[in-house]
Length: 311
Image (cartoon, rainbow, N blue to C red; front, side, top):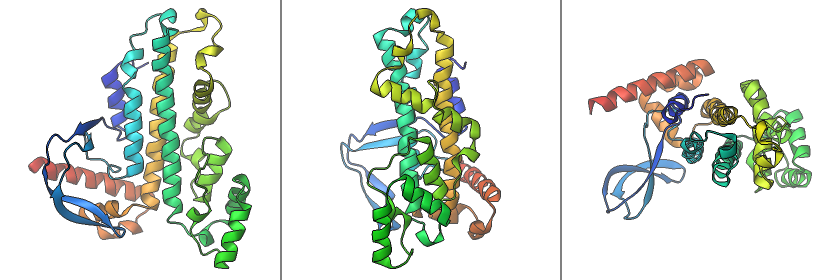
């Protein structure tokens, strides 16, 4: 058990998850330069902030994922969850654990962490699918995806419309997509040539195993009833074990998303990330192997840190 708020944050920072503060602009301020998405290109412009605008300030901008809206939203979700961690550290007895207030703190952490994971998986899957042509997909994985998500009619309609597989995978994805189920999540990402269980088999099982201590199962239990309904005797509760379980949920999910985000960055960086690459690493980065790519990005972050420290 970690049992310390700052120590938990030190562990999270290893995976580039930093504290985020929401700040409200009190006055209208001049911006030296800002990036605006114009026709798919990020253009540097000058302008002003709006009074009352809510902005998120990350404690450390030196991260390979700081531009990614998927990872930033995930980080915000983890911040929401960890804000309750100090509350459960004050629980001393099993009787205290079962109080309405402490039950709420415990449940909220799990809900926020798993919701952050769910939203990250969906947004990242959609983003990668928007850059992938159906004709390039392994046909075996494509058939599995079509059957599992029950989109045969939509697929046939696209075939009729294009008279080929020359369309984006994203055109097959429904407005609402369920990636909370183990099989569906695996098949969806395998379509994009990402084998999620291989990234970290232990964490994958911790998240999706069909047991009461599986993270997704625990989330479902809380959302539809309450985890505490499974406790029939106060002697079943070990407070330290429950706090350690919460720590494992947070750290496992963060590590898993961190590893996926490296692959996402490699497969499809967004325009702002490409601009950053061109500024801080050599132009032939696309020719590198995945491991060399990671090393190049880490070196680029160190270079960026040195430049910031001079200013």
